[in-house]
Amino acid sequence: MDQLFRSQEARMQGLDHRMDQLAQALQTLLTRTDPVSGTAAPPVNPQVTTPPAATIPLRLPSPPRYGGDPTTCRGFLNQCAIQFELMPYMFPSDRARVGYMISLLTDRALAWASPLWQKESPLINDYRDFVATMQRIFDMPGREATASASLMSLQQGSRSLSDYAIEFRTIAAELGWNNEALVAAFMHGLSDKLKDELAAREMPEDLEDLILFISRIDLRLRQRQSQKEKQRKPPIRLAPRFSNSTPQSLDPEEPMQLGATSLTEQEKSHRRSEGLCLYCGGRGHFARYCPNKPGNART
Image (cartoon, rainbow, N blue to C red; front, side, top):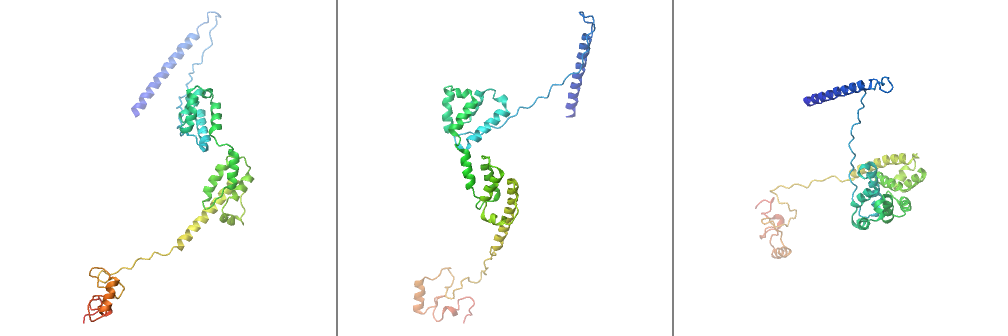
C-alpha cells in the first residue's frame, strides 16, 4: 500500500512540473513585444484551476409495483416523483418518466396504461397529464372527508397508546386541523382507563407533548398490570412421587396388580356373590385382610 501511495505521489509531482513548464512557456510568449502596439503584453497569472471532483450519481431503489389499489395510488405516485426529482439525469423527458411508470404497473393499472403507450396517446408525452389522469381513475375520492370521519370515530380500545397514536397521526396528516381540534379528537378516542387516570392531572396543550405525556403513563399502567397478573397466578404444585415397590392404588378392593388390569363390574359382582376376596379372588377372607395384599401380614 505504501508503494502505491509513493507511486501516485511521484506521478502528481511529475504533472505539477509539466504544468509549471507550460505556464513558463506561455508567459514567455505573451511577454514578447506586441507587433501592433509596440508594447509588452501584460503578464498572465500562471495559476491553474483544479477541476471539481467527479460526483457519484445517486441511485434509488425502484418503487414497488402498482396494480390499481386506491389506498396505495398516492404513495406510488409520490415515490415516482421522488425518483424523477433526485435523479433527473435518468429521466430526461416526460416520455421517459411516463414509460418508467408504466413499466412498474401490473394488473388493472397496466391494463389501463398499455393501450395508451401502444396507440401513442398524447398522455405518454405529458407527465403531468398522465399523473392527473391516473389520480382520477385510481386514487381514493373524497380523501379529506373520509379522513375526518375516520379520525372522529377512531378509538384506542385495548391496544397500547403508541399504536393508537401512530394511526391517529397517519389519518391527521390528511387534514388541516389546528392543534386544539386534534387534541380534542385524540382525547375523545382514548380508553376509559386512561381518561380516568388523566382526570385529575394537568396535561400539555400541544398535541405532540400530550402524546408523549400519556404514553409514559400508559406504559407504567401496563407494567403494573403485568405485575398484578403474575402475582395472581397460583403456585406450581409438583405431582406426588410414589415408590416403585408400593402399589399406587388407593382402593382397598383393587385386585392384585399382576397384570395391572382392574376388575370389571361383572367380575366384582361374581366375587361378592360367591364370597370371594375382591383383591386376590381367594376364599376365607375379605380384601381388607387379604394376605396377598402388600402391608398385610401373612397368617
